[in-house]
Length: 181
Image (cartoon, rainbow, N blue to C red; front, side, top):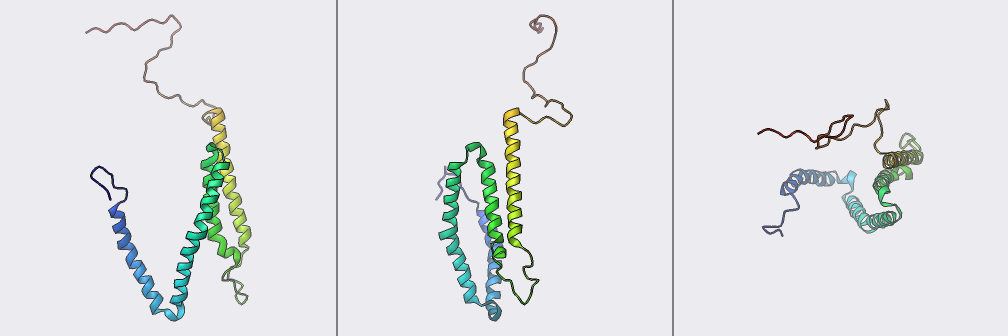
């Protein structure tokens, strides 16, 4: 409950928009599950939805939290943003490709279903993710060691603007002339 001095942390507009869009979509899906019951098997669909929620909440989420905590302790702070990005991308790729790698839906009667070597595709995608992370870390390391990267023409980076006025002369430094009122 928010008081007069406590800022609201959630948007009512977001909730209303989600309900306006989400409820009709859920109603359409539920209606389709029951009107096409012979093809959809609503009881099996319900078990799958509940099972997916249970697996996510009781197995997947704790495993991700434990792995993230262990990785956070092992990875130095300046490397953590790149490592975290690589870990998240790798996890999403692994989860999305898991049914394909396992061959769920493959049929010996129809060789065109799942025709590729999805494990090799997953491995190639993971290699690409970690090569991108390595490039990120190399660029970050160079920036930390050498400062900003110079342009291709060898020109030095432009200095930041100073708020004080300076002049370059070959003679002694003299104070500015006083202003007349």
